[in-house]
Length: 265
Image (cartoon, rainbow, N blue to C red; front, side):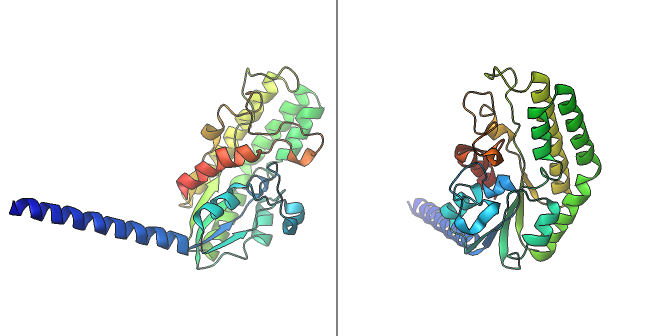
């Protein structure tokens, strides 16, 4: 009987200690500041509900950084991601909120450097041969030039926020091959665009690992929700708001990006 009471006491003690440690960890996480950097995939272009103060940067209350901050209540939340941003724009215009009190940073960047918008415009408006040639040019840039530009961004983030956990978010594949689309790009073009997205993600992930950051791969999350899937979380060509074309919808932010970021934050 005495042994039973001792065992019960130790079990209760360890359980209470575990709760205390968990509570302390959660409190510590909530006490750190969160800064969201990057391009249109982080600002939330395509999801609507853009804040008036963000202007052409089109930061959305439905973007994954805003959704995460609303759910987790960090001690501070600074949202500087901007539509159209390239690596140089992040360095020159987005890093001011970073500091020693920054505990968490998110960023998606690299797609605009590689000419994402021009690739898609070329493929929609011109021939298959011209499209494939433009994709190959983008692939060459991603292989030869983008890594050094990413290094500059990641080095700048680490210098300004030495204690931060940095999560770099990737890009989805755009198309479900052999899917429901009966018009638009050819299957060769769709396959080449997907392959270029894979190369971009692989390149980013390598630089992320070399800097000791965390890569959030969204491709699996978007599987079954690509364009031509019948349940797309990505806009195709949006003729009424062309800037939203090929960007995640609100469902893509909440169902694709947010869970991936949350699991890596």
